[in-house]
Image (cartoon, helix red, strand yellow):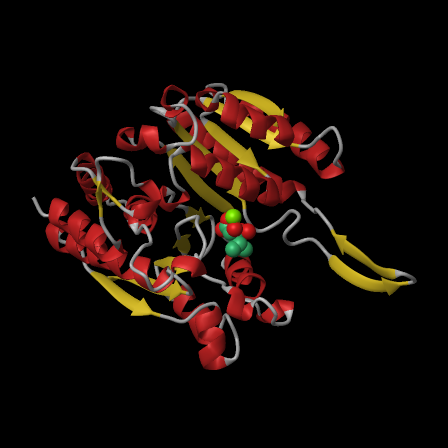
Length: 357
Ligand code: IPM
Ligand code: MG
């Protein structure tokens, strides 16, 4: 039976980077004898414009009925002044993650050898870098109680960072298991010197360590972690952390790879896994054929590997990306002297060509 993939391009460059990834999925399916059924849906500002809500019930149903979801990006200045619950980020992306129960966001930070010089760090610091960040995605500071109340002289504004033991348990176990399969090292990142939630997080994660004797566990404060990531990133293997810490650290870590336009992600643990590039909708370059589609194409490869267990097809897509980079093709964000600059569409076509060997 055909596997069902929901395709949600969203806003900005979403409409440009998702179609090439779908083409790559189709080609991989053809090559390896798999069958996918793609069903397109609206999300974000695009959905708001058409239906009055950034996450229409129809889209949520579509996601629930699918085996996996491929998402582009949401948001843009046009929708920034809407009431919070109608904005693409707070009204669509966050509720989608929450409603589908996608509590673990895997963000591999991998440096392609061809791009080691594209990083803003010295290439010897980043060449060969291969980190997996596990970002808790449905709790923490993003989802705790919020308030805005008027007081004399202005407002009192509140965001709260809430975790239950269960929420820490499931994401930490997932990170331990990943570390076991990878380099055997897990860094749990917190702010236990200040936050109650972090103190419990640290204590609980430490308690789990005895169940994973093959994993070396360390704890690190998030501010120190930010520093260590630019000082000596290769010390890390798997990182696990709170939602907001993970959001910030992965943008930082992305730059180690040369461009945020290279980083895919998988959000798992719930009904249907969601695959999306970690970058946003980049309204400034939208519609100009400038965006890098590789993060989305690599997200599609993660989908094949994680949701569909199609290791061969996933690896083929990744090797096609490598081959295209080897030949010197670059989008603007990873462009370097002597390389050949191509647009979004051409980059997509190049990956396709290098697939069908
Ligand atoms: C990300 C993004 C989102 C987040 C935004 C668009 C709400 O920055 O996926 O990292 O903060 O989670
Ligand atoms: Mg982010």
